[in-house]
Amino acid sequence: MKRRHLIFVFIAAIAISSCNSSERPPTDTPQPQPMPDIPVTGIVIPSPIPLETLLAVEEIPTVTLTSTLSVTLASPREQPVNCRFGPDVSYAVIGALNLGRQAEVIGKNMDITWLYVRNPSDPSTSCWLSADFINVKGDVELLPVVGPPEIMVTGIQVSIEPSAMNVACEAFPQTVILSAEITTNGPAIVTWFWKSSTGKTSSQKQVLFEEGRVKTVQDLYQVDQAGDYSLQVQSEVPNTALGEAHFKVICTP
Image 1 (cartoon, rainbow, N blue to C red):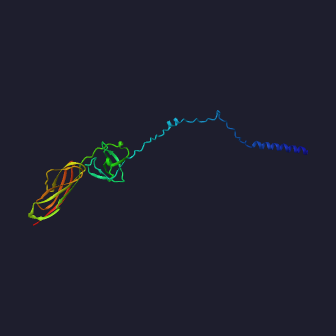
Image 2 (cartoon, rainbow, N blue to C red):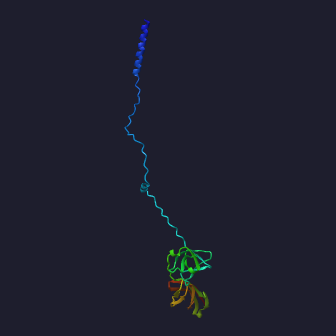
Image 3 (tube, rainbow, N blue to C red):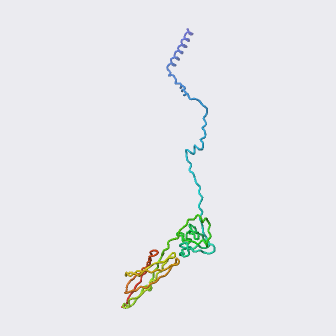
């Protein structure tokens, strides 16, 4: 009887275990993903791109090397050299190239007897040096040919003598001396005249300049009464230039 009871208990335990196993949800087991069919080939090594192809794709700028132009320089040989307005001794002196100094040469005349330089006395202007008195460093043949400048009157300074006078009122007319310093930059024949504040005008006069320099011209002016006066000197040839001065005349009864 006892043995039969143990067999019953064993069978019951097996039945209960089977029921518990059937109630548990099945565990999701990850399924292996299918692999795509990729053809397997050998390792591909990229081929080097030819240099010509690279240059065709991206242009490399070309750098052109140019030689730096050398500056032509002039220096005095043994003594200071006058620098003139034009390529001749008849032109006015407007600068000087002193010993120990240099001037940049920027031109020449046709037969290379004169060189056109930056004025060593005033670099904002230019002037001419005689090739006979200077040493040149550089290639003169490469310099441009420069023509002579226009000759002209560059200034007129006027003065009156006396600049003031006091005379008796019955002592008119009186005479004053008109002086004018006319400056040219080269040889020229200058035509000039004067006119006064009273409307008087002189005849045209001429003065010869053998070279560029200052010349003084004079004339007399007649004063008919007391007053304030001005006299103007004007050149007409080779160009128009003006100069003016004032004077005063007082009369005493």
